[in-house]
Length: 585
Figure 1 (cartoon, helix red, strand yellow):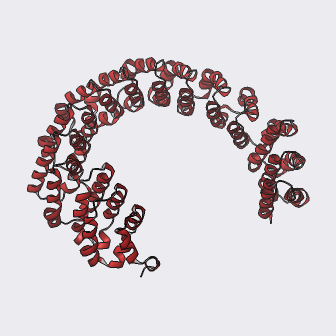
Figure 2 (cartoon, helix red, strand yellow):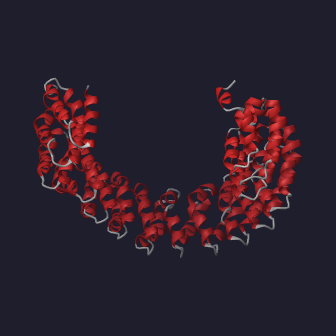
């Protein structure tokens, strides 16, 4: 027997299922599998399931947990041959008022349905579907819409006919909530039906829903259009979907237009190249120029994806003029979305067109007043660099990047720091020292801790890029000079930088340059510095131990320093020095 069962007697769990306290009932529901295991499959089927079915009139939280548990309950009642027994309680749960409970019950029914054989499906699942579809309350009809796709493939042809007819009635239901649910699940059912029935039934259902008076129904049909179009040939798509598509792009509700814009690339791929080329370019341009900022934002996100589906001439003639207008869009969200995506055009347009058309736009976006716009451009510069090369990029964009490195928004400065090692790799050491070296050091004295921390990590990455000799000459002396600064934050930055750079430099460099500074800071008056010195020594010891020449320094200098710190008056200093001493042993 399961030891957990012995620890928690079954009788108590069963009592808790009936308890007045909601938290106890919830606990018992969460452990239904324990109860079922103890009762055995037969008693679980004959006693536990009927009892649960009777307790549907409970708190929503309990019902939600129950609906989830029943979906994974088949193995506890004797396997798939008895799976239909779970349908009754789940049917009741699928008709309750609380949406989350209904959705969870539908999810569990969709788990159980594939386990049913055809006779179970015809005898139990299909009648359940009919009862829910014909229910007096919209709640049960709403749940029913999510159960057709799963059972359709397993049903007999006659039952399939009834299912399509019944789903059609739900698409025309008087209650908008039911029509919304039907629109949500139409695409899944369309994937299951034959081509013939797709054209005779599913497309008329789609047409009805796409012209619904409620925009909350219409906007859900966009994904249905994608699902159905993927199953049809380009000619059929042109015949059935060209007009609905044009109507959606011009819909009076911005929410419908937003959904079309947000799914435009998927739609274009689904309907095929001919329709995309002949009819969708103008539709896309219309969305890019929409009078609602939300629609323009969604359309901006689709620019590179759509550009891949049309030729270069079309991009330059139709899409690029819209992109140029969006760079100065009144909405910062549109500009931010465009900044995130515009670099994706560079590989499609090639070096010449990128230099001529896109670089001026990048520069404009880099100078945008809104930080997220600048941030998004910086994070995607690598794509542009791959197309036009670092020389052109540095000539045109470097002044703007240097300007951003001193931006008053610290998140922008942080994004630039993250990008510096990549720039350094591509620019080379001479260019870097001349243009960006001083900048990297200035970040170590930034007023924001996150910037100082990122700057120390940045130094390590630069050491890995340019080598230890470069670091020894260029940055280590400057870092160590800060170790004697009267402001303790600068001294702290020195310790952080030493700790971050330790894995990237050689033991000799640590011995000759870094160790004297560390041993000086052991006696620093600020406790925060002293405990960070202990952390730093812990990082330095493994590097020094690698080399026989520097290994004796661990016992001669570093351990005595840690012993001194372990007798410090400050608790934190003692804690970190003890931790470092344990690591050394």
